[in-house]
Length: 380
Image (cartoon, rainbow, N blue to C red; front, side, top):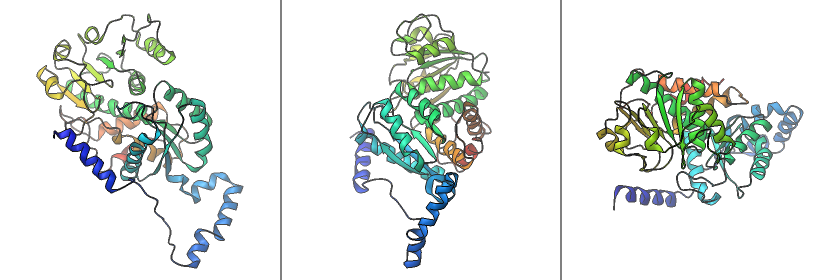
């Protein structure tokens, strides 16, 4: 049994031992009749009356002040594809655990038996009174863009698709420290982005917003450029924003590039491709569980800084570094809309946790204390 098979068996055993990774726990005493009369009838009736007169006070008296719904339709689960809501549930439970452990937030998995955009929007709109924020998760592109955009327009609580914006924040933070290590600047550095799904488009947009000027983006058909006739509206926006006008694939995009960022699929980046980049290039091979290129291969080809999405190599780009703090800040500061400016401040706060970045230390360990608190201060 290899290492991956052993991990899979241990994961199955853990989930079988603990059916469900989260549970409901009372925060108030319930030991006698008086306790019961205060927590439930008749006392709770007065609380409902107070909230009924002023709905803003619901945060003062209920779980809404510290709760997030993790909403998925199971259409893009990790790197596994469209497996449906039941298969999404273990992932959303895990996400709820991370919200609690790293952000102190009570999060609830909401896995929907529909992949219809209108139904998803309406369902989330209907359940929103319970929650202080909505975390969209594992919803396939391009529907995820429309769903997030529409919900942000309808709801008075923050909505964030973590596959997009959590990824973008951590990538930007890692890249900021990488520039310091490599002595590069954002205006001149040349970036190749492999992947134009939810993560790829969001990362690209945030990098452009930050001031990176030279980015080439590829999807499964090659470089996204203004001359292509098969682009939907979101990719057309990227083509226009990156000013790309030539075609070709990854091998044509990489020569002379300083940075490769992969949010696509494993094994697509070769040693020769890395060697064609500028000296000591930066490789963010973030596909999981198999990166676009394994770190030892990238290193052998001359890479100077290497990051992956895996925990068994240095420089793990993991969304858990970002989303607990982002939602912690949004809840604490009653933020209605999580903006790009906030996300950039969050990335800068995350990068600043590493005062002296090194090639194998551009991001903090996920278990380092105080990460969520520092990021939360940026979300105001």
